[in-house]
Image (cartoon, rainbow, N blue to C red; front, side, top):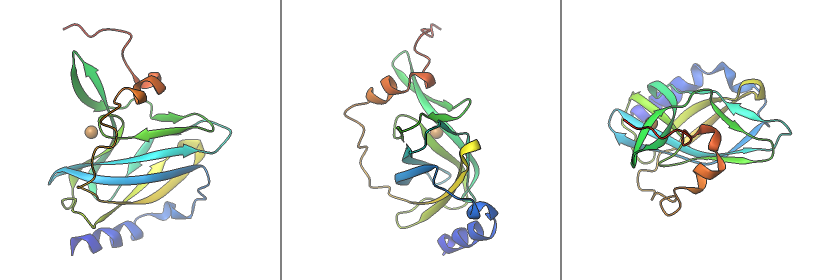
Length: 168
Ligand SMILES: [Cu+2]
């Protein structure tokens, strides 16, 4: 029954819910557990505005820490690290948070992420406003990006560190 406790806590502690949210459509969101204490959330950010919006941070009552992470390939090995400066979504474009790429990292989960649960996230888009979403947990979902791991890199060079070959 911890699932209900999480939802109730989120509702009480989130006064931000009243903010208008026509800034960014968040579609196809899902979360999955990596282990009982950590998990990640994935989604597509669809910016309908005429200005760029930047996802600067995410908060959740479901975990002790919620961070924006990405993966960068270093000498053929994908390494996970925090994103500096947030994720900018240009006007009229989409940005996918997906496996092996950008994601919302949940660390110190209050309860393991199990199918059927919902994780409440508050997305902070800075000047574009704040948006609350309920993300269903789907541990069974296949990695739908596995076939084309480089599409995202080409579209978002701003987050990549490919210009300097890390040689160590
Ligand atoms: Cu991560």
